Length: 235
Image (cartoon, rainbow, N blue to C red; front, side, top):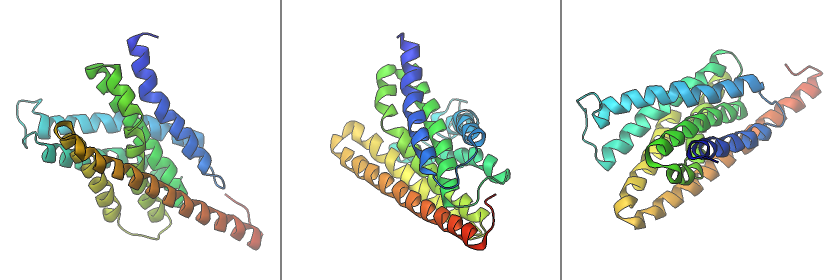
């Protein structure tokens, strides 16, 4: 396997493996595969492109001017503020198409957008820093991005049901967790003891996604029982 093939494999294989897992967690009302795949692709292309342009202007100074200095705090803050709404652009595809009607749908589409974003981001890191960077990131960042986007996806799912009117709290939580992850990751480069906070955030991410899946499966099961009880059909 040549270097480019290795970078592609370790960037996309972990993300696609996780997508397969989360898709099959949607046991009672599985989403159309074409919308799940399309959301993944949009997260991997449109969302990454939007985030790269905005971050290059705001922090990295690629256009000859940077709005903020490239400190650990500012880079982490901008990453959260820019990347979470960018990934939400992909989630809006199934939302606008009427494919989202609950928590589990939000988890699936949110995860798809986040995993697509993480895969392409890890591919680009591999091109710049080598296959080692992609391998390390491939086993850490996909689940993190999936969690943050799943939070926003759940918000869209609840909004589609008419249970909430605003997504602000869901965006705020996703941005906060993303900021904390990046901030402590940056700090740990010079002070390795900060890795303990990153490890803590990994467990928080796992707990959040598991919680959303349990809620989503319970909600979907209640819908199934309701359809049976009233003698209706699932649509």
